[in-house]
Length: 265
Image (cartoon, rainbow, N blue to C red; front, side):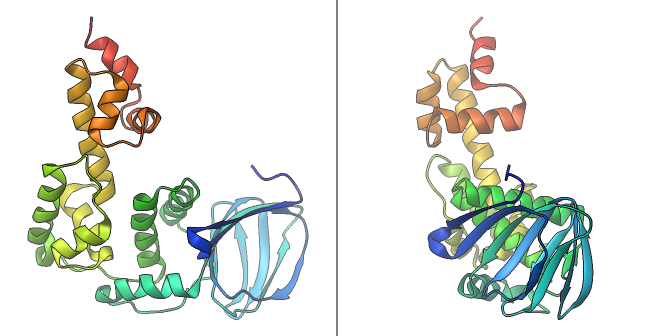
């Protein structure tokens, strides 16, 4: 958590993303950024002016800014806290190129304040994946986030579902191996964004989440068969035992050790 009156700034993704956590009671003069900015108000409220109008954002709202867009910011009462991601124009341009098959209606962030709990949650998980260095999860979530914010419409399921069967088979055949989203998209003959959206419609999981589930399936089978936890983690394709432990607990609510003990009584 950022201390009151403090800013915590981190460079991510080779400098293409800047993460800022802030807590401040200051009013900021009009200024502009070179990047696209998306952030979440985590406490309090703020009022700001931009070329898109005078707006007010409260806790749980997303705030956005386009490159070179002049804006300011002031607390509504006292301090407010917010968490931002600033994306380079090059990164956003590459993502929008990928999204172009989805018929993007805008290449600007149109709403300075987004009052949508689902999008706020998606931003929070995308930001966490970026901070934790979870490359595959971050890539997927960022594409979906941009698809929503830039109004990209996915193709119909009928157009793409049969292509995704090959993607699912590729993962099922060897879940312990890495399966980069770009490779899966090439196999499906779709863009990365189309692959993520269509695969989720087909299976209920994004490709990365599906891969994680299949690795957990392998780990559970190995643990039931008597494998040591570290060996099960390595053979299933996890980075290490702690990685398996974290994902196992998030999915099932109990640890691999608890699961192992239950099958060794």
